[in-house]
Length: 304
Image (tube, rainbow, N blue to C red; front, side, top):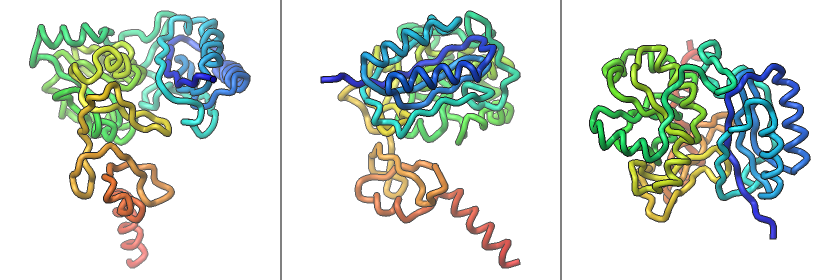
């Protein structure tokens, strides 16, 4: 019986010809029957793929032969290629769309001037040593934190990663600039960039969790400083590290505990909201606030 898995990885390294790497990655993933997403940029590669264990191993072995990709940290989790609708391999100007490609400089060792990497055990030690002087800073889209986050974390008002620069420059976090900031995200790739953006804007002591929430959760489950499940960008949507996970999410209708994300009723909108079992029908017939306001604006313009 074939064993199926999902892998998550990234590598920051100079890529001289992203188009050539894209074609190579596409052919390689197709050869092994993998599905998921691969992004290639001048600064490296970022991927989440599913398939048979033996095929994924061969894919990883080959990908690591590219200069600079050899030390990439591959996270393995339960799942399969069926958790992704198709295979997508694209070239983009950034591995993560922060809208600041000019701020990210990479060499063969990775990102230049990023945050200090902390192993999961070192995260706990830093908190034990410095206490309230340590601040966890969520590097994900705000909705992801609705179901899981580090205790006491700062969760910026972000719908997409494009919002982070605006948030950092808004002044609302300036009081944290002399704190010890531990940035975190799913697998670590977003914080590689976020930590650079923060340091460039005067945050002095910036760290990032090596391997992200995934590695921390593998080490401590929910017995450490992380609480709740992890949002993931595939058909699973929610990943539990252990059987003791607290349900932090609350239904947007009745505040009942839930982990169920459902899309806005507008088929063109990808906004996710939390609903309990009793209010699934509401989700299927209700648009989100943004869509409602947009409809009102259009109606107003047509009437004037």
